[in-house]
Length: 399
Picture 1: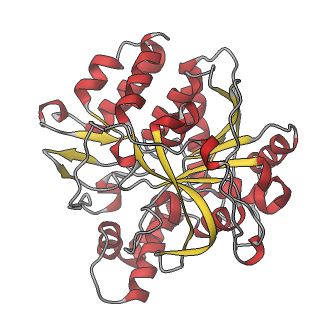
Picture 2 (picture 1 turned 30 degrees about the vertical axis):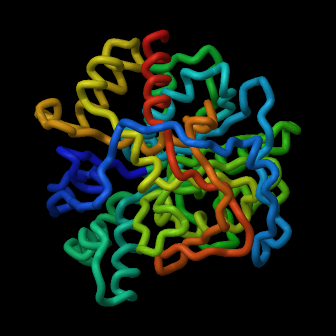
């Protein structure tokens, strides 16, 4: 998921790219959302997975008859697969650390590498903006327009989803090595391309594993999707029967009731895969990044106090954070960074930290706007960030 720094209550850009501004030939993109991040969150009434289990509905089209229900949790750890574009941003590593340090809650059977590529994303934004014509641009549409089609095409040629997936695979290995869990999860390569269409899967070891794991037990398989959902969408297309056996937690985008153009990296990289997820995944928890997961901010002073020096995992996270925020961050009052991808892991560990509601099932159109479709899904609307970070810091201290 994209990240954002806030400084003195002001947002400073929705997505700092891995590639340098010099490589892109553009200045950093910034935005001025009117809602400031906060690290103080009050506890609210929460719809847990057990409460949501009573929710059922039909989904339109080929998905007619699908039911939206999240199973009740047993006493033991959940069976989990984490699908992540870990080389994209540092929130993935924080999410992986939280998960790997919680063996009493999560039995991580595999961590799968998701594809990612910035050129494809920017090309999609540019095409939609051109189709839409006039009107206000989103921050990343502005970036796409400023770069132009030729420069975006050169970026696509230089680095595609295969490179992103392989870089993520290496980064996952690095995080697992630092965490050194007693039970090491499998690390599995994912798709090297996006779906070629809404009905055609992309074969990969990750998709094969998801199908196999879903069919291997009567216990549900929880899949936390922290990037483009290509791997899990391919698994659903390869074997539609696993839909009832999966619980998919997807962090991306704006709330589904939003009317504005959505520019989420996770949502739009592989639009066909995202649409498969919303149309064919019965047990779906959607966690909006903007306005919900973005509350999961942390500052450099907090990292220095509670993360650095807390074992190999703490040192790795502190190193990643310091490199990303740059020098002078500690002297910038209010400067914080969002760790969006921690949200699905937080819900898996303790659903009371993530307030949810039953919402109309949504779908993202080719115009990058949300619209409702028949049926319902579970959607998050608030996160208790204090509980999430307190838990991470305590686990690091005890590691």
